[in-house]
Image (cartoon, rainbow, N blue to C red; front, side, top):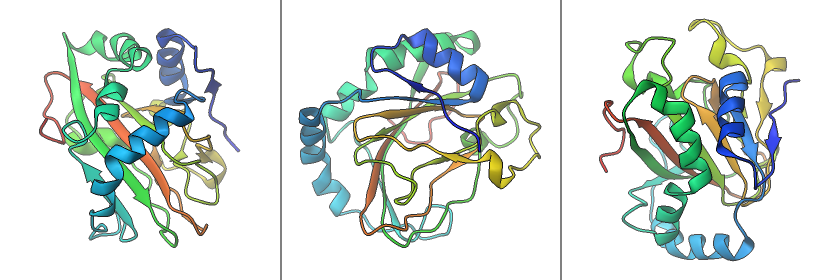
Length: 222
């Protein structure tokens, strides 16, 4: 089975960008302290608890997605401006633009009994109109809880960022982004991925912060 590369918290932006170009994704371990996670949760959970479930199979009928987090959380604003991540954006996105922008903020809460989300590429938010040689996005999912195979850790297909658009992944090519709370999955808009199945008794929460090329339309109007 394929595996994702893990990088230490003190890695450089260039290491992240290199991993994205090669595999389409990587994990940076233990970036946030327990204290920082507690503060983040105290700010966002009132909004998360008030969010209804998804209405279709793609967004997840046992999954909630809470947006507009820049307006709601000081900690989220700090994560958006994390220097290691923005440095990776400089390296990875600026070959295709003069500047990049915040595309989306979203707390994804996968409840027990939620099945696997269909595998997909986030770049398809703009349809099939972008050249394959252009990378439109750098995406992050900050683990607010531990991500395990049992509770629905994000599924990723390393190397699929180099595949032809119609190629599908075989089961042995799919891995899961298992990581401790406070770690961050970084992935490109071209890599195949999806939410995993939550077969546990606990919720799995990840904070999705996405950046895109400055000349593209944002998914969430900032």
